[in-house]
Length: 84
Image (cartoon, rainbow, N blue to C red; front, side):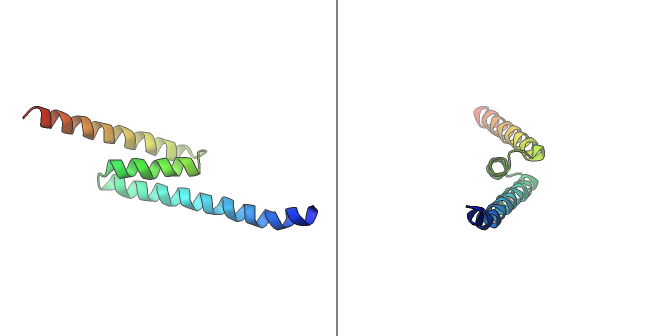
């Protein structure tokens, strides 16, 4: 039993490390999408980051901001197309 746990520890550590990497990459991708104004893509990336690492407040804040921006863009586009 002890030998089995010793074998699983490095695998668990690697899994933790990789999930952190995936969250970090999704967050960076979200920031890139936000910079060019692609808020729908940013929402998707930030949502992935939050799902991968829900304890990072900056991921949650970025997701909220992107969702608000995407919503504002949709509302603005709807008003513009409805007024013509």
